[in-house]
Image 1: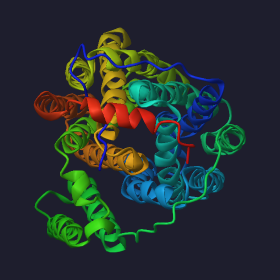
Image 2: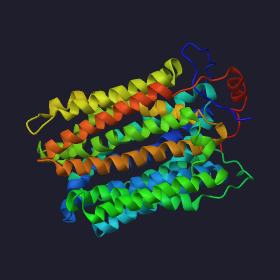
Image 3: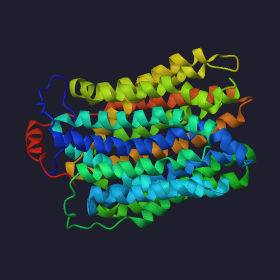
Image 4: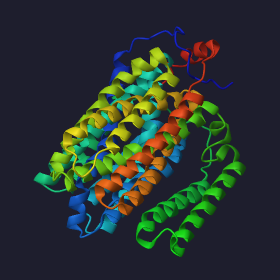
Length: 484
């Protein structure tokens, strides 16, 4: 019988188990691994102007150094979760880290913007194998009663990596070259592998083998690529251009085909029907999809605003993001105890409300604004991101059977990356259509505010479900399984 470690009503008593030394070491190992991935997302955001200059490229092109990685990551991460369940989470983590490190090195020596985009896309394969394995090992390492702590620790480590990313990226870009943003990943990845090798014990892979849904992966991947190309090129070719309309039509056909393929794939579907039909899980994924445009847009366009409007250097614009990123990290670590006390619906909804408020405040900034006027919005946005992502990840993962932790984590992150990639394409189209950079960012951030308010409505309506006492007792007994 399926066990659903889902949300309790406030005041429901749950036992809090102490953490032993092995569990602490496992969490440290996973935290180091998360920093490798998280740092890569934000360190590059402050280097885009330098990449654009070195390759004599344009913003719409170099943006794909972010989009290519995010798209491949988002599309393949569900398969990464399935592979982790099939062949062992530790084993797939090592494979993913090796791929990530190899193409990080090649990105660091890329001879052109097109080669850089290609290598970044291949880096996404490594990240897609790493992330669900990390989530699965972390939730397995902690007792079920501390699931909120697992989400807070992982997202806190991600927040720390995100926070230091712009500083590291800006420092390397100013003092050495943007290329070192990629090259530095190699020793960091090696360190993460070493700690994981010591702290996590690998078990035998399960005997059951499920085939991967290759047609579903292909239709979803190509469909999203066509959609992003349409959004990217619409500002240059025009929204009524036949090429743009053809890209939108092709994307729509492939995404509909994906839905039909999933319906007939049964247990082998990329997103199995019994998973997506779980109402709290589906609601969490939808909320993530709607909210993710905000984080991606803030990471890309706040540094652009600081660099091009305020005249900051790459290092200064990286440091300028600290109010948001440091708050994100700190609140993520605090969200675990908050989740255990107030539970999913309250924490997720408060996070979504804060994200909407923060991005709206930032949308007020214009060409004449100073940096100090950006700080309040970044602080509120950081609080919202820290609360929302840690809590919604735990709410989604614990809504499903514990045996599907890696798959659940992969699906949630697929929605985050897909939502962020599509949202970034929409934001870029809006910004490029504006009368100035500042005016375009204002409009884009206001659209993001509306999307986040929709996510808040979804969170209030459907995120979180009461946990049955019998399931809590049963799942508690299964905690001491060896981490896979």
